Image (tube, rainbow, N blue to C red):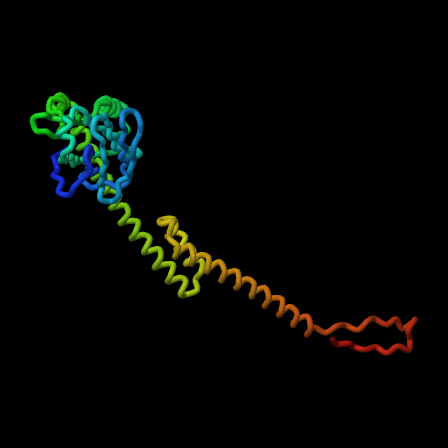
Amino acid sequence: MLLSFCAISITESSAQNIYDVKGTVKKSRKKTEGAIVTLFKGSSQVSQQTTSSNGRFDVKMDLNAEYTLTISKSGHITKKFYFNTKGVPDERAKEEFGGQDIEVSIFEMPKDPGVVAQINQILSQPMAKFYYDEKIKEIDFDKGYSQSMLDALSKLNQIEQEAIKKADEEAKTKSASESAAASKYEAAIIKGDAGFAKKDYTTARAAYTDALSIKPGEEYPKNKIIEIEKLIADASKNAALEADYKAAIAKAAKPTAAPKVDPVTEPNKPLKMLYT
């Protein structure tokens, strides 16, 4: 549904000369968080709010003024609504108004330039206009304007339904892809843990690296790789120390030959075999 609106009764007392417009922003039939709701009085911005997870917004309008309400979100279409609170008789202005509760659907802007041009042409006009209706003594939507917008709204609705269908298909594809990735990630972690337990650090490191390539943001494989690198570095350092120690022992145990004695120049010097 592109737009639905209904009068809402106010049970609590409210300030006079204030018109209350509430609403819900939806995308693919779901309440939308992060939509920006901006209210302009004439050409001046008077308020702005961002919808939470419930998609709700609430704006207040003074009487005897003209307002434009825009609903936008980055990468999505922008819809606007016109409110004219002028023409309310003084006596009626002293009484409470029912207000409006509208539902606004948005969708991501398509990439096709031709479709974008159609959307921009439609959205250059307000989705609905609201004026004071003397017959019902309330501010209500202009039925004549809405009738004139039927073809445009029908076209926009068709585009939106196509966008919703595409979004659903992409969501299913994404879900299947994420499920497959989760299975591959889990298998890589199991393989890594098994290698780590056996102190087969080469296999373990390769498996954890594969897991990170699937889910780069996961801390567990990152930490395990760091742990493996430290273990390998420590093992390498210990191996080097062991090699140096064995070399020193071997050197200490090796006999040292006695110096040569020249019998001509040193005929009386005894020959000795020295050991260290």
